[in-house]
Image (cartoon, rainbow, N blue to C red; front, side, top):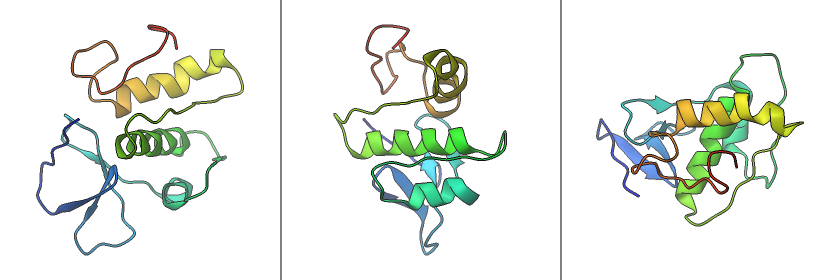
Length: 126
């Protein structure tokens, strides 16, 4: 899988990109899109965490889902052939929230597109 950057001042740190000389500020480049993701608050703490499990809690629309999805995507880039699990209280709640955000805000192409970097097991509904 290839990754390109719009500007050259970023260095690769696993699946994340960090501007030169700016320690602690993480950026993720979503392949094929001309923007990066920068976590804030609890999402930044989760991003820096090395724990095997991370749980984010907080008010509506504070970046919890997007932060978790960006970290998940970066880890999948960093560790090819790894398997990941997305969990919500119910499967029915996962589809319109986390999975839709992952497809629309994180992936450069929707699953099924020839350039999409992921494979969805089980077809359109994992």
